[in-house]
Length: 116
Image (cartoon, rainbow, N blue to C red; front, side):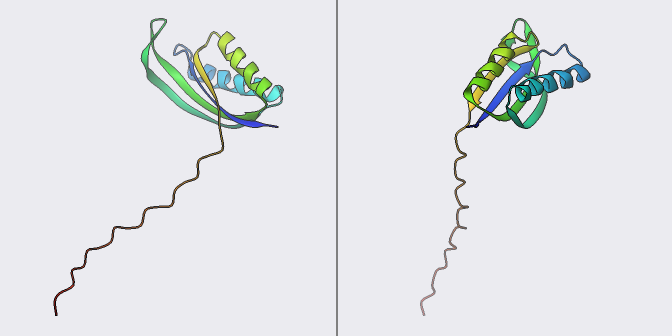
């Protein structure tokens, strides 16, 4: 049974735009080759890190949503740890989306009744 996952990873900033796309495609292709299904890939772009990692202050952020079984997700996490261009990665299993609450009704207008 496929489970929904989200992985956020940060690539080193020294790679150029073409390499950036190639790295993202390579990671997605490895997941597909192992039987997973990539739902979406969001390229956030180059951002400043909250703290330095190995004297690096920036990185390319990527968020990928996918469906796979637990073994495939663990293998993806292992491959990301071994990839020299990936500085950090966070893999999260997604639960069912929370129901969206209905919009709040507009505030009642206070109509003072005139004595009459």
